[in-house]
Amino acid sequence: MKDIITLGIESSCDETSVAVVKNGREVLSNIINSQIKIHEKYGGVVPEIASRNHVEAISDVTKEALKEANIRFEDIDNIACTYGPGLVGALLVGVSYAKALSYTLNVPLIGTNHIQGHIAANYITHKELEPPFLCMIISGGHTHLVHIKSYEEYEILGKTRDDAIGEAFDKVARVIGLGYPGGPKIDKLAKEGIPNIQLPKTHFDNLDFSFSGIKTAIINLHHKNPDINKADLCASFEENVTHILIDNVLKAAKQLNIDKIALAGGVSANTYIREKFLELEKKNNMKIYYPEPILCTDNAAMIACAGYYNYINGKCSDMYLNAIPNLKLGEKL
Image 1 (cartoon, rainbow, N blue to C red):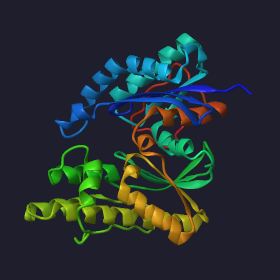
Image 2 (cartoon, one colour):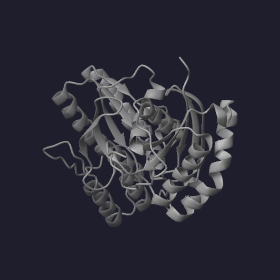
Image 3 (cartoon, helix red, strand yellow):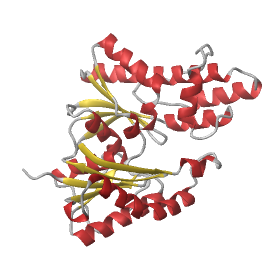
Image 4 (cartoon, rainbow, N blue to C red):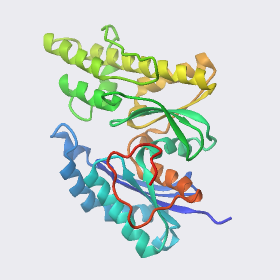
């Protein structure tokens, strides 16, 4: 059986990434050009600057990905690109480039959902993982608890009603003076602290999430007491949000009788969250999966993997493919 070579393109936010993946799970190259240093001075991603840098970088990143994978353009069987969700200008760069390559090389174009890509990152790290399982998607823009029924069928069991968890990390970090990006900085400082500060937890009758209350509580605490121990505050914040995640995962696992839980998205690289989910694995006889750190953040290997499963299931796009900044998981092309 002939190997299937997928070229993945990711440009939904501030990483320009191109990857070459064989048969969906074997990564031949995964080049990531990050703009973090560019956006740090602004305290967050500036969409127009991100788009311009994607335009400048994407051709060189593609050439580097092909070189590292030791393949030519002629070896590519299909091209998978992120078409949403994300920043519309940034998405358009990747979509336009992918369409041009698809047309020139006469190979199928596979529009791929960015959230689906984060889920698929687990397939790369864990070759044995197959649906069904639960996936906790935690990133800067999303907090979703999803039932992965098959490679192409998803059911969202719960999601945030306000801030995504990564957004809460960034806002808390900004308020207490840690800067951007907030997630890694809070993770590092929390290791020096003790979770001894009581913070509110928001629970619902269903499996939804809310992080605006804890964010507001921390902002108020810091304003009232600027000398508060920031390490303790970070440790308390991490403990609080992790408890909320685990509580909902346990409820969903019990309801659906599922013992396989995957983490996905940038926040799944958080060391405290991983540690607590591994404790969950031991205490509740579950199997916990999470991608290696480089696959937690935005990258094209995960897009190529997700695109591969779309491709073998006949889900190809045409030249009318457009960027959809508010694309939902499971939404049809």
